[in-house]
Structure formats: structure tokens, C-alpha cells
Length: 449
Image 1 (cartoon, rainbow, N blue to C red):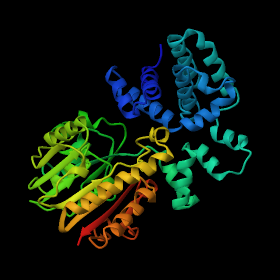
Image 2 (image 1 turned 60 degrees about the horizontal axis):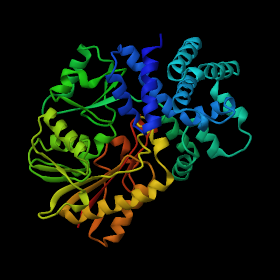
Image 3 (image 1 turned 180 degrees about the vertical axis):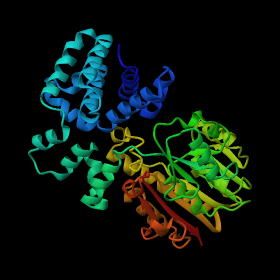
Image 4 (image 1 turned 120 degrees about the horizontal axis):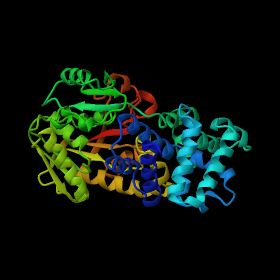
């Protein structure tokens, strides 16, 4: 009998490979179709995310055992091989015989003629040893440092090269390594419904993992251990929201106050939108725009769950929003390459290309330029991304400031960020995953003169 965890992970990974589905959504769909124990859910999640996260390295390790090339294999068979190599080399606690046996049984169900091939490949791989890191060092004959980092940490070369250029080799490798370490689950407590202490006590009483206060945001809790937050009464009662702690630092930069009129130009899925509403004590108005109707519904659902009434979810492009009357503050949480969130979104490594960056910077510039035109004099515009590339961050901000010729100025946020980060503020703040075990974000504030 095939392990339910492996079978579930397989179905999610096939959807990722064949349909370009996002791994989180594919896994969610696969889990919903099966009744798994918490232990099996955790293993399925580890296999699915880990296989996507390490795919570049896995393919390098597999290539010598497939004479006709990996591209010639059926997607289903290649998926079985990839997830098996991941388990054999990265999950040493799993018995090799169980991994191999399940792989062969899966192949028999998918394509019986391929079962002996899968068995032969995996047995050969095992015979040569499963220490993947030593294999990479043995097989590498050139001194290309970018290629070495790419294989060791399983990121495309162009991403590695960009990060090394921006941060230097040592810091870039720390960022790459942090992106391969799954993080704790962070939650933001809704101060209109509960206190941090009461939520922490309730979670502890329910035996929900290991709980600690946030390192950067007073309203944050970090939970270590496998947990399905959406099954908790606290979640359904609107006491908390799942949000990375680094993301929680962005909304307060607007300096939101009760009664303000605020625009969130790219609002979905609504984490920062609802945080603004909470900080404004659910008074005033927040216009939350997105271009997809399904994402608008996500915002509506989040506000309903959190009992927030000040948010108006609107379908439309933020660049078309009228500033008549002008807004008190505008948030531009811009679409980006996402290099800061790859520990939670590992499929970005396969989905993003270097050509995407130029297209995204044009969109980011358009959004920020328009935001600066529709905010009132003296009002704030906060620009944020979840990427780490200066081209999408500092250069966009400085470009708009220069283009608008004195209409806006860069505002100092050193006193608005947590003390441990104040010294990192330059042209805004870049929070990288290696610093406080958060996702990576960039944030800057402009003020209309």
C-alpha cells in the first residue's frame, strides 16, 4: 500500500509540473481530497514543498542515471523520481526501502512499463550514495562560483548572480540558505477582537505547537510546529490573521489614524488592508483595489471574518483610481519578482525569469507615480515589495522622486521601524530572510510636498 502522504504529494507535484499550478494551491487541493492524519499531512507538505524547492539540484543529481535525458521522461515518472530523490537525500529519517518501494508502486499505477526503470534508477542512485552535497563538489570541475551556489542552494543562476551583485557573495549565500529553511507560522492578533496575551493563552491551552512573541511586531505571535490555523475557533472568530511578521511592518508606515481615507492600490489577498483597518480602529474608509474578481472576494471574506466594515473592496486597476478628493495615505504593495518569499513560495524559482524584472519595474513605476499624484499634500505613500532586487526597490523609488521634481520626497522611516532595524534604513528598508527568520521585504515612504 502506497503511503498516503507520498501519494498526496505526488498528485500535487504532477499538477505543479503539468498545469503550472502553484504548489500551495495544488497541495491544498490534493489534501482536500483525502483524509490524512496530521503526521501524514506534515510529511506530504514536506515532500511537495521540498521537491519543488530543491528541483534544480535534484535534476542535476538525476541526470547521469537517465541516458535519454530528463526532458524525454513522462511528467508523472519524472515527478516520482524527483520526489524520491528528495526523500532519499534530504529526509534521511525515512527508510530508503520504503521510499523506493512506494516509488515503484506509484509507477505501476501510472505506467506499469516504467516501474522497472524507476526501480533501476533509484537503486543505482542509492548504490552511489545519497550525500547530495559531496556529489555536487565531486562533479563540479569549473570554478564558477555562481554555478556552485546555484547547485548548492537550488536557485537559477540569474537569481544568484543578481543577489551576489546586490549583497556580496557572503550575504547572498546567507539569503539563499535562509530561503531553504521553512519558517514558523506567524499570526497577527486583531486588537479589536482580542489581546496578544489572550490569544497566546488560548493557543497554549489547545496544545498548538511552541508559541513565542514576535521579534519585530508587538501584535505578532510565532508558532513552531505543524498547525492548520484555519481550523481554529480563534481564526473563525476573527481574533487573528496568518501573516509573515516582516509584512506586518509595512502598514504602520502609513501612520494610519481613525477616520482617515486610505487607498490600497494592490490589496489582495488583504493582509495589509485588514491591518490598516485594525490600526484605524475600523473607522474611516479604506478603498482596496485588485484586478481579479476572485481576489476581491478574498478581501471581502477576510474583512467579514475579522468583523471589519471600513474596507471597500473594489475591482479595478490602481493606476485608474481617481484622486478626487485626494487620499490621506496610499499603499502601493506592488507586484514583484517575489525573491523575498521563496521559502514559502518555492515555485517562484521555476516560474520567474530574468526578463520578468524589467516588465515588473515598469508596472511598479507606473503604480508609484500615480499614487504620488492622488495623495493629498502632506500625505504619505508607502511603497513595498516582497523582493530583494534593488532594480525593483530603491531604483524605482528614487526614479519616481527624481521624475516628479520636488512634488514628493523620500521620508525617513528609521523611527517607524523596530529598533533592531533602524540602523538598516537607507533608501527605505530591505528586510532579508537571514536577519530575523522572516520573509524578505522592501519598504519605503514618500511624502507629498
